[in-house]
Image 1 (cartoon, rainbow, N blue to C red):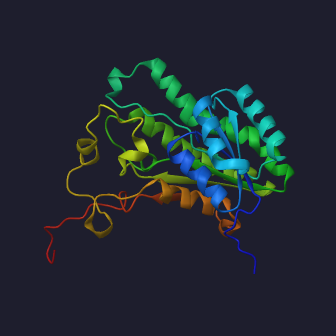
Image 2: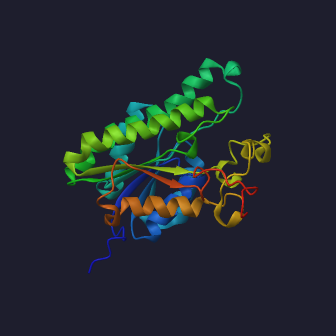
Length: 266
């Protein structure tokens, strides 16, 4: 029986793949037999990452908030590998601080990258996937798209929006054989969010809710980039062929609830 988990020959464009979670996803796609287009606004870092990954990777410059940039990136991806069967909308930025201190310019930029970017990406890649008889789109949301937290209002709004975009797109493009899902990683591993959290009290932020959160084995939330990449690769594969319009949470129980050690029996 064929291995439905394999990405053998599958061509996937990953945004924000020059570093961090995007880079981990790109590496996993190749490890599972696929080819990856590293799309990023960071030209030097993106080209270097593609060179490290070898012939199964290519770099294209992409400003996700710009429709013309998407058109050029899709064209270059087709030139490099002949087409695409998958898209991972990973690129995002984070703004921390009180809403009343949020500069409208920063708000506009965040929404443009975090929400408009994935929307333009789906719009640009859908005709290509349709031409190949279907495909898989994975949008990276966040546990911030499942709950609320102070100091992240703009980011939280954008990630809730990504989940709505995911569900509406799954319905709209389902008849074309295109699956659209969302992955919601935790913020439990500071490495995943290091570029955003410099000069910020991460420990206080993560533990700012009343009462300890539920975590696997009683440990602090332990998820890393490889966990997210594993989930994304599965969603890109035929093993997830009946999954669409859904949220897949990778958070070690962060959003499951609060564990109360003082309750009877604990």
